[in-house]
Image 1 (spheres, helix red, strand yellow):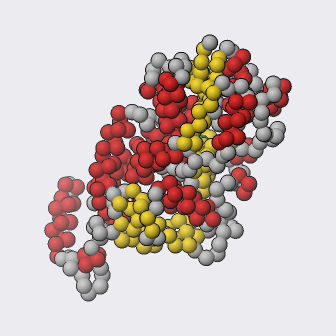
Image 2 (tube, rainbow, N blue to C red):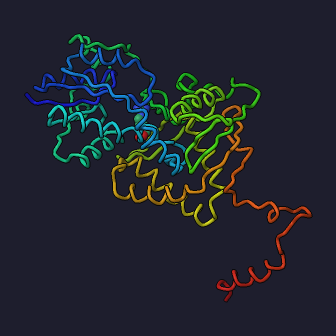
Image 3 (cartoon, rainbow, N blue to C red):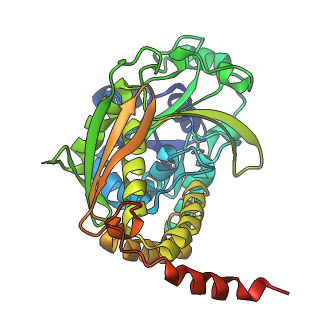
Amino acid sequence: MKKIVLAYSGGLDTSCAIKWLKDKGFEVVCFIADLGQDEDFQKIEERALAGGASKVYVKDLKDEFIKDFIIPAIKANAVYEGKYLLATALGRPLIAKYLVEVAHKEKAEYVGHGCTGKGNDQVRLEVTTGILDPKLKIIAPLREWEFKSREEEIDYALKHNIPIDVTKKKVYSLDRNLWGISIEAGILENLDQEPPEDAYIMTKSPNSASTYPKYVEISFEKGVPKKVDGKAYGLKEMIFMLNEIGGAYGVGRSDMVENRLVGIKSREIYEAPAGTILYTAHRELECLVLDRELAHFKEIISLKYAELIYYGLWYSQLKEALDGFINSTQEHVSGTIRLKLFKGACVAVGRQSPQSLYKKELATYGKEDKFDQKLAEGFIKIWGMPYKR
Ligand code: ARG
């Protein structure tokens, strides 16, 4: 019998996919990745078995996700098109890595997933699978099957006793992990529509958030967040905590029309409270400790790095080479940034670092000024020389 390892979420699509694949003659092994999404994994596992899976793997990937994906993304200041902190995109190569691993363990020739044929996630999962094991065959039921709507899938599930817990109206399509949540479809497809409050999950509305600001201090060592308000935390604990704090102050929302890999523009909203806090603090610290040329060049690399993540090219040579550059830039990125969280905003209001390149005696307009202003005259003459005709 042909065997397939299916990336399973417990949702309607992948639940129907188990039955659909079995009808096509497959033995279906389900793989469930725990990336810190808010789920009852035991319930999902039971559902997979009740839905016809022969075996289920549940793997806690949170630590690996943070160590190998989130930390590099923080160091890189990776943001796609100015607004998206890439939570979904960062999770996909890791899921694919374990799909391949489980397929090897199970001696399965196939892997499968529940992505649609219009999105980026199919590309990320399949490109990664292809890089890690080009011999594995991939099946994407949603690209092939006959169902034309969610209602048809629900009817199919009911008819075949596939356990699901959805009603016929599901408002949005969601993808969540510890780095954030991606929310699309439904009313959000109307570009003129402000996202209704019920679309947001991790963050409180800035309108109803506290009228008093909250200050948090984030300390970094060589680009990695280590402390909050002077107290050391493991990054996993820190991220969960900052998701709560940021969420309570409405921090980390974004609303964008993005360019997908498959050539279309789509509207999606995101929430990433901890990501926004850590990204803002990290960037502010870099402003203090990186010299001008390095800082400017790194911005170009950040853009490229975010693109590679979005494009599903995590396991590419370019990404690895850029990691070499980015890691070397983090040598002096140690220090503490004080942030003010207030009604959705997250801004730096305090900065200190033993590696700081800021020299008050040079910057000051006060009487301690040590800047020799006479030197500027010669500098300007030579600097402007090439541009005179
Ligand atoms: N547009 C985002 C990306 O390509 C998120 C995709 C998944 N979104 C969702 N709501 N299911 O990374």
